[in-house]
Length: 246
Image 1 (cartoon, rainbow, N blue to C red):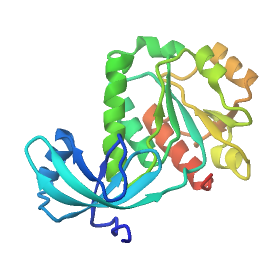
Image 2: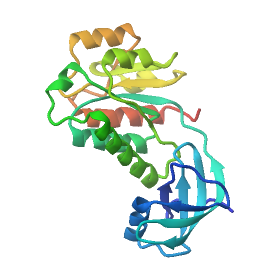
Image 3: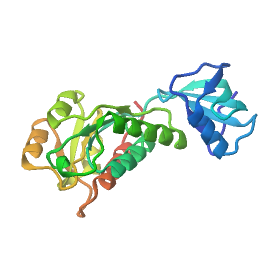
Image 4: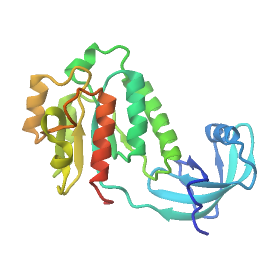
């Protein structure tokens, strides 16, 4: 069976996985969304596990707290090229919006960084409870965008801890209006991409120096001052447009 045309088929995430010809029970969140969409028994569906597997499926039964589906053909989708984001710990709503859009654009990992100027933001998005909200927002975005790969979400980190994690050979850019255009910085450069996105108010001199010492080059998105979520969205879109599947 061919995978259904994604333009008109409801998509859902089954993070615990699935197998071809399996009868699968999905939880109350999925059941709620199916009811909102007024899906009837027999409706074609698309499933992903968020780890590169996609399947066609058929809705068998829909109850108040669960949905039963029959899984059809399973296909493995190759991962996109690695694009990692050092996201600022900042305003909660703006972080959630960026997490959603970053998922739609296929970001590989999301690592929140407590920059010096993050500490003055209230209320800011941090801690295990907020991390769970980020993951929930990403799951919803993955389903709606018909993606196959859920970003890896890492705990809050200081800049030093984030820099210790960096993948070897990565093309590293700090979003900074004084740098060369980001598209020029990323063009024709092999290897994974890591984008460092500062908080409201920007990076301070010590943070800039640490980033530069770890191979980050300043990269500009233009002459205007952007909110961090706008800058993150624009940078990820440029990075994804310049990369190919791994």
